[in-house]
Image 1 (cartoon, helix red, strand yellow):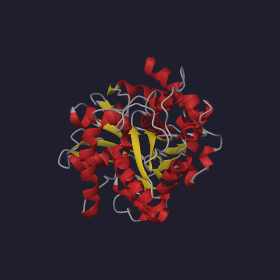
Image 2 (image 1 turned 90 degrees about the vertical axis):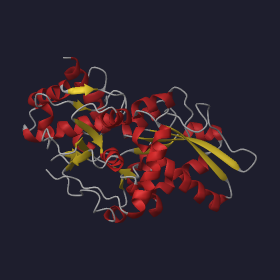
Image 3 (image 1 turned 60 degrees about the horizontal axis):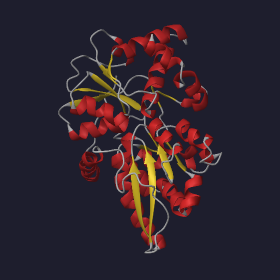
Image 4 (image 1 turned 180 degrees about the horizontal axis):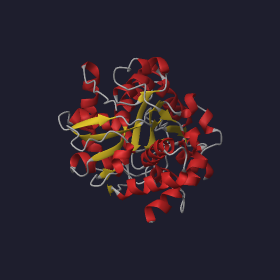
Length: 354
């Protein structure tokens, strides 16, 4: 298998080093800025505040992006803008919005979590077509992070089911990244077993029997592996693996499996909340600006794959663009995939509880 090499030269290293410092602050709690109070409309002094509810591994990216957008919005409108961030497992974050966390925008790990908020009546239907690329301004994929030297010789998914291998991955019941992890592993085994579902279920059961810790979110899983030193391999978002490599270049390496998945995090305006807060204009601009060349490059510098092909190619030395990636459409779309694999009593529950 091909190892993904790091590129930490020049400006990219500076941006991400700053982000690593910010990460230490963010790890103190899921919500940063103004705490858990509802963030609302424009104040009289030309300042507008709003809340972005996001998933775990976007902390560093949005810390940098919020500064970039604030400068852009100040120049465009004359208004100061303060963006408060909330981070956690994507599924848990979606439920928090449904239960009253007054997000103006959501930037979550998968479309199903946004759809859940839509079904609660807070986001208008057809949200996925509001922005380019099905409202996915950046993408990622799933890779393995292993200890330097790869003593256990972990090269592909079938190595994760071997005796004595300790796997770290989050819980797909609470983490969007964990859902992508599960589906990537499933896709690999389906190719190996010629779509034999019984054999694939057996493979997945063995894989999860080797899971040492099932954290609630992707960042928690990264901390378990990187900070606490548990496990032989972390199944990780590509950007999470790169950040760990940047912080500890002599301790870890990245392995790209033979089959993975195109992970498409989704963004949306929370319509009912922006109407109440009076923040629709700035909320829509905030998500639209993610597609600017400047923001796309910032995403790449934070190890997300830009959705704009021309900008993505600027990072061809950083990402393995030849990886064999299935898509969520290979599983019938997110509604079908979630029903089959992750709903209560679905495939994950069946194999994990056996």
